[in-house]
Image (tube, rainbow over all chains, first blue to last red; front, side):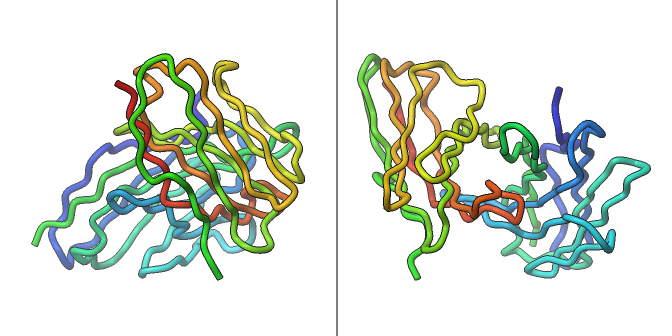
Amino acid sequence: AQSVTQLDSQVPVFEEAPVELRCNYSSSVSVYLFWYVQYPNQGLQLLLKYLSGSTLVKGINGFEAEFNKSQTSFHLRKPSVHISDTAEYFCAAYHSGGYQKVTFGTGTKLQVIP
Amino acid sequence: DAGVTQSPTHLIKTRGQHVTLRCSPISGHKSVSWYQQVLGQGPQFIFQYYEKEERGRGNFPDRFSARQFPNYSSELNVNALLLGDSALYLCASSDLTGGLYGYTFGSGTRLTVV
C-alpha cells in the first residue's frame, strides 16, 4: 500500500500567486513526514519536516506545511511563488521499527508561469 | 565541508554488464541509503547501511547489492544490467536514525542501459 499519496502530478501557477501541493499519508505509517524539492538534474533537498509539536511547520524558501491528523494530510503551501520555485516536490514518510527507511510519493511538478 | 559526493555523474552501459556506483557521505554521518529514481517517478528505496551493516533493503532483485566501508563511504553494485535499470541513482547521507531528521542527498548518478 502506498504510504504517501500526492494527488496532483503537475500544478501550474502564475508568479506571485499562492500555491498548495497536496499530500495524504497512510494512517499505518508513523507520523514523521517531510517535503523535499528536486531541481532539474539535481538530488533532493529537504524543505521541511514534521516530527512532533506544532502542526504548522515552516521550512526554507518561504514554504510551510500543515499536519492534519484527522484528514491524514500534510499539504505544502507558499503564499507567493517565484519563478525559481519551479521544481518537483516530493512528500515523504519515515518508517521506524524493523527496517528504517523513508518512502516518497510520486512527486508534483510545480510550474511557475511568468 | 563537502556535501554528499557521488561518482560517476553519468554513465552508459550495455545490457548484461555490471556497474559500480560510489558515494561518500557528509562528515559525521555514518549512514548511507541508496535510492533509484526512474524518470517521472519518486525515489524508490534500495538499501540502507549503517556502520558497515545492512539495516534495510527494498523490493529489488538480488542483482542489486551494496556495501559500506570503514570510512562510511558506500558502493552500489548492479549485475546483469537490464534496460529497466536505467535511472538516476541517489545516495542519501544521514545520522544513525536513517533519515528521521532528514536526508542529505547527493546529485546522483545517471545510469543509461542500452
